[in-house]
Length: 338
Ligand code: ATP
Ligand code: MG
Image (cartoon, rainbow, N blue to C red; front, side, top):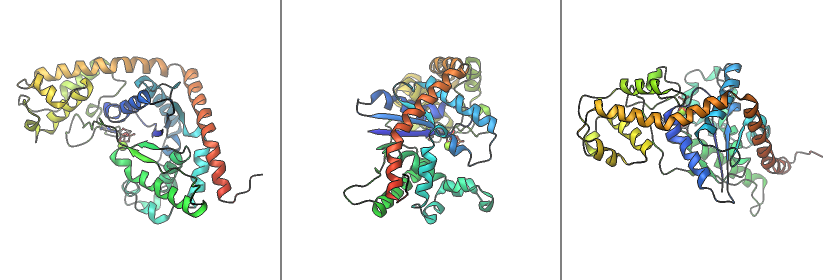
């Protein structure tokens, strides 16, 4: 099994990213057998598809690397790198643009959402973004890609590109690209905003009070939890009683995810109690979980040399794995390289 996953190095990581994605990456890494490996990358080459500040991107890339390690990604067991240090991603992307069809890309909902009404003014990179994503996984003969709902369509596209390339340029018994399968982790929690139970917790929400960031200190966490939107009723003893109470449901979901319990188990303990009692317990559980992560994060961010060395080493390992597939792709296309 080879698992590949990426994250954009923008902004501060939050509890939703941790409980919905990164914690599952750590579990995958920890559960792997000896013949399998995980590659995790910072999608800095994707970040230039939207207007961005170069200084912020540089800082964000290093911070994201530190945050992933602080959360438990072990760079001696997993391959951790940023795309910009593995130019094979960009090279393969170009080679695959010959196979990807305009019509396929036009149908991508993320393109439609992010370009909005201003398609003429959108960057070419924003349009071809899914081809780079296809290159990210096809480059490594990836078997499994952990994806959230929002990325399923792009993985389908990667499979379509791989299939068409194999059909057009390979013999049936020697396809070049492995078709990657989606990997849906068993416990992917979806965490909602602390200010509005109908919106997901998000990096791009303008209100800092809507999210718990992994770098928040204990006081900030307690304050945000205390101010989180809730309702005046006591918690029910059954999950069915949380219907139509999205904020209450979210807080119980967060508690359950942090404690490794089901929502039923949480309600067995807290049913009948109000938020005056539940919120401090939730805040303490968050502080307990996040304190080791944020202190390790601060330590790592302060050591630029060590971070550079980790990313350089990860990139060297990634390049080693990428080179044979890239060479075979040039060759299949009839490109002469001596
Ligand atoms: P943005 O608002 O800029 O899209 P984001 O908060 O959605 O940022 P991403 O970088 O898009 O963060 O996502 C990183 C990973 O975290 C993805 O795997 C995504 O599915 C997951 N994720 C993001 N938000 C949540 C959430 N609220 N609950 C669970 N998982 C989440
Ligand atoms: Mg997102």
